[in-house]
Length: 356
Ligand SMILES: *[C@@H]1O[C@H](CO)[C@@H](O)[C@H](O)[C@H]1NC(C)=O
Ligand SMILES: *[C@@H]1O[C@H](CO)[C@@H](O)[C@H](O)[C@H]1NC(C)=O
Ligand SMILES: *[C@@H]1O[C@H](CO)[C@@H](O)[C@H](O)[C@H]1NC(C)=O
Ligand SMILES: *[C@@H]1O[C@H](CO)[C@@H](O)[C@H](O)[C@H]1NC(C)=O
Ligand SMILES: *[C@@H]1O[C@H](CO)[C@@H](O)[C@H](O)[C@H]1NC(C)=O
Ligand SMILES: *[C@@H]1O[C@H](CO)[C@@H](O)[C@H](O)[C@H]1NC(C)=O
Ligand SMILES: *[C@@H]1O[C@H](CO)[C@@H](O)[C@H](O)[C@H]1NC(C)=O
Ligand SMILES: *[C@@H]1O[C@H](CO)[C@@H](O)[C@H](O)[C@H]1NC(C)=O
Ligand SMILES: *[C@@H]1O[C@H](CO)[C@@H](O)[C@H](O)[C@H]1NC(C)=O
Ligand SMILES: *[C@@H]1O[C@H](CO)[C@@H](O)[C@H](O)[C@H]1NC(C)=O
Image (tube, rainbow, N blue to C red; front, side, top):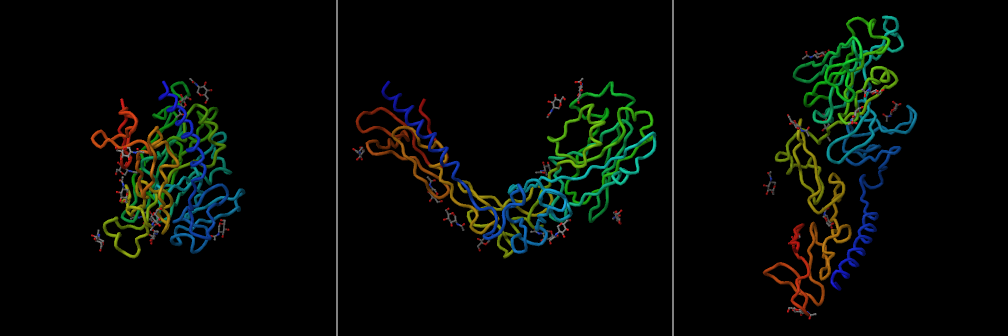
């Protein structure tokens, strides 16, 4: 009984400590003396807002309020909403749409029937996180891609006389169709077209729409047939990587950009590599001194049971026995000197033995 009482008390203290520590963790994401924010968006190196702050001119981000709120524009002209150090960026891209009034293309909107999307040389449209989506009941649309070694196109068709068979939440051919995105695209045009100018379906579907969208961000419903006409942009995910070489080829070259305490990862798709902090370290792996040791003892509940103390190491931590307890080597646990009662656990890197 007395033992349980101590256990509860110690755990309570541990929770409070870990909350304090979590609030204190912050590491620089930009180079020294470089701005690290544009509006609400964090700008981590290799991206940067001014010359010398980004890894090269292609990773320069234009922080502008020319279009209203202050927002970052990447090379190629897309507005970014988030940059991740895991090699992705969230951006907004225009959708293609063809809208009709009494069977005639609406001239105000006809500039949008074909839109192009240029992600620049160092970004590709993520093939795993996006789909090409086409919405409409008198609609066919193309996704045309220009690549160095040849152009290619894909697309889909959606025709329906009414909304009877449309299923909310399902983009499977009635009122909405979608296709997978090919790998490695960075320059595409989207074209939205109609068979008979929405003459028969205009009452519930005045436009056709074609866009690339992050899969989790668009949910088709009957409403979309009308409401998308008021929307200009869609969120999508781009992949980015450094250079065109693999880790093996670049790791000993002067162009290798991963900082200390980090490792190199070959880009999953397309070419190039990414950097990642080694296990037990956190920060921006693209900066020279970006990855710093995580003090596992401060921000977690490691080694918080009675009889234990946590000792932080570089990249790891160790649980050891406090005064009055000693290690039972064969069992790998701490034992009180007073009694032979087994109290707690001890172990090396991220491994525990938990008592039954
Ligand atoms: C940033 O974008 C704005 C708006 O398109 C443009 O006027 C300005 O020249 C750009 N700045 C740079 C440094 O490219
Ligand atoms: C790809 O399309 C572009 C624009 O339509 C054209 O200029 C280019 O020649 C095409 N490339 C090939 C390899 O056909
Ligand atoms: C999409 O909408 C349908 C019905 O409108 C709903 O059942 C479903 O949970 C939604 N899915 C997502 C991912 O929001
Ligand atoms: C489908 O969603 C629309 C709103 O988008 C709603 O008005 C309609 O009732 C829904 N239909 C069904 C069958 O759930
Ligand atoms: C970005 O792409 C350009 C063109 O391929 C290349 O020259 C440059 O090295 C790339 N930048 C980085 C940081 O990978
Ligand atoms: C890089 O250089 C180090 C030290 O010179 C060497 O041990 C290692 O094998 C090299 N790595 C590659 C992939 O060439
Ligand atoms: C590696 O991490 C340690 C511990 O945080 C730090 O002292 C050291 O400066 C780092 N090394 C580099 C090259 O970043
Ligand atoms: C990379 O492409 C392959 C297919 O070529 C796909 O299976 C994989 O999921 C892709 N990974 C990412 C992160 O895009
Ligand atoms: C506890 O026991 C261990 C092993 O018997 C011994 O080395 C250590 O000095 C003892 N500690 C105290 C505080 O008595
Ligand atoms: C922690 O990492 C250091 C440096 O890599 C190593 O010397 C030490 O043995 C490690 N400790 C454990 C418990 O893994």
